[in-house]
Length: 244
Ligand code: SF4
Image (tube, rainbow, N blue to C red; front, side, top):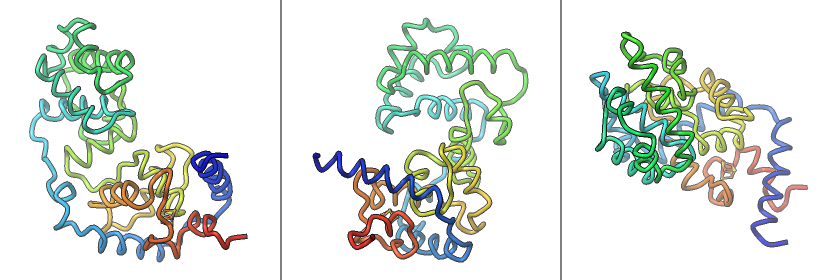
């Protein structure tokens, strides 16, 4: 068995074992966020500090489009696709006036372009048919075609500046490994996580968990030996070479 295959098989075994483990206590959750805050202070992290505030519905629409295009796409590819589309049209009516071929060609860098083009059209049709302003709360955002919990929470956090922890693939993985929250899907993890995060930790919580997932608790190679959260981590305990 290759190294990668062995790591993937161990990861699967550990994940199955985690399902029956207790979640972290509230005291441990508080300690965990204090550790992350010390590791990634808000002042040193521009992305956590500089929150773009949406002022108009036009800004909010552009954020929704970016989020819709971001599914299973790297940030740089999403940015390319969004810029190409916005160069053609940046309003719901303008996008509806484009041909499907134009939309697909523009958003191709973000992948899944046929599905995304369809969802984009549905979103634009919904917004042009309604005279209401674009909703600015989770429930309203999730009522829009193509917008799920992750997208709604990303818009709430980064476009509207709310203290919400959006759960993407990195946050989902880190939460489940640590026992911070449990869920089979990102939406389940988000629902479990929200009431467990202390108020003070919410504003920068997404960026801290995200960066921690990218830099330390990586999908294929979690750096458990150097991890500052190892002492409370269920996955880290299972992964220790001396664990029975
Ligand atoms: S101990 Fe390992 S699995 Fe747990 S949070 Fe740290 S890097 Fe991730």
